[in-house]
Amino acid sequence: MNRVDVITSAFPILLEGLKVTLYIFVIAIILGFIIGLAVALLRLAPLKILNWVAKIYVDAIRGTPFIVQLFFIYFGINSLQIISLNNTTAGIITVAINAGAYFSEIIRAGIQSIDKGQTEAARSIGLTSVQSMRFVVLPQAFRRMLPTITNQSIISLKDTSLLSVIGIADLTQQGQIQASATFEAFKIWLIVGVIYFVVIYLLTILANFVERRFQLR
Amino acid sequence: MSIITVKNLKKSFGNVEVLKDINAEVQEKEVVCVIGPSGSGKSTFLRCLNRLEEISGGEVIINGHDITAPKVDINKVRQEVGMVFQQFNLFPHKTVLENITLGPIKIRATKKAEAEKLALELLDKVGLRAKANSYPGELSGGQKQRVAIARALAMNPKIMLFDEPTSALDPEMVGDVLEVMKQLAKEGMTMVVVTHEMGFAREVGDRVIFMDGGYIVEENEPNQLFGNPQHERTKAFLSKVL
Image 1 (cartoon, rainbow over the protein chains, first blue to last red):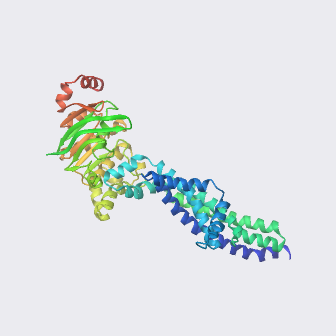
Image 2: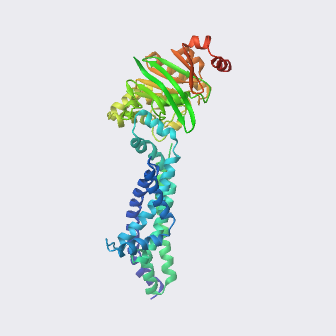
Image 3: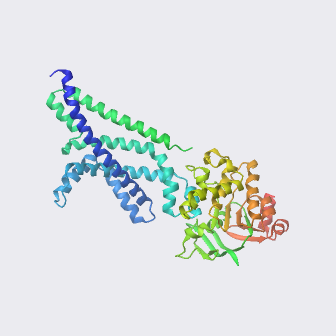
């Protein structure tokens, strides 16, 4: 095979892998965000036991490597034979739970950065605590959180490459297959790297756009 | 019957007792100004009236609602009590109009068009209709405070609480805000005003309360309290600020 052939034959396959990567990423990041928001609110709830539950979750995730979490969920939980998770589901769950812990800290810090006077003003009008959070605190907090949320999303996107070790046919897995099939490791891994880079770059542009749209006047 | 009744009110932060034993009444349409040195507990007292501070002991009855009762719907009571803060606390992510319509739309389920009509009327009243679509960040301090007053009025409250409304303002902005407050007093609004503006207290107040060290030391008509204070602490305070 000549040089051009390697790229033209491998590229569509790598793009198939990219589809899997993006599919897992999008679902996991949305789930992760919902988990993060819920955990942040638990962390700030006026009930100690809820704060603890949230803190234990965050500490457990932050204190262990991603790959261990992945093995625990895929091999560990499946070995109990209570439920059976396929590798894609296990991958999505791991990324979501992992991102959720980091998101929750970002969201908690964002909420706490909003001046107490905002809540007081909202409550003094007669809004409930949920309404104050929803209409006054969170919209302001999200604007401040956006750069850090983008950052964590990029990290999570890159974390999905580790899912290749449980046999998910993502971009990295396809890269591995192509690299060993073609003996063109240098080119294949360069292309894989460029694809990740382009996707993340586009994500950054999108994030900047969103940030500008929501900028505080 | 008084619209605000405070009996044996106590408030502690940790081990620090900020309000020791406050007894006060405010009649409907009365304007009561609360003065006193910083740390005297006057802001805390005001914040207990809509339970922005949890009350440690005693009773606070607002328009017939005992707000310390366990089953009181405090959100309902707060709708009847407008509050204006020293730091304005406008919502920076919302326009002036949205700041004012948020309460009516979300709490009263007022139609948007109707809420906006009311908001514009209130903005007329505070002289800021032209700023309806501005963001708080584009306003001066005095303008912000007038919007904050309009926001509180949008819930059509029976009582307005002012927590040092002019203390964060440049001197030339103070007049506009006080003018709006005077107008409000003239229209018969019940007002409790924590203030350092002795001129305002004297001119607009029906009664002045002097607080120090967590107690009400003295209360009287403004002319009496300023002209002929009875207590040493009142005299000492007034001699410093007048």
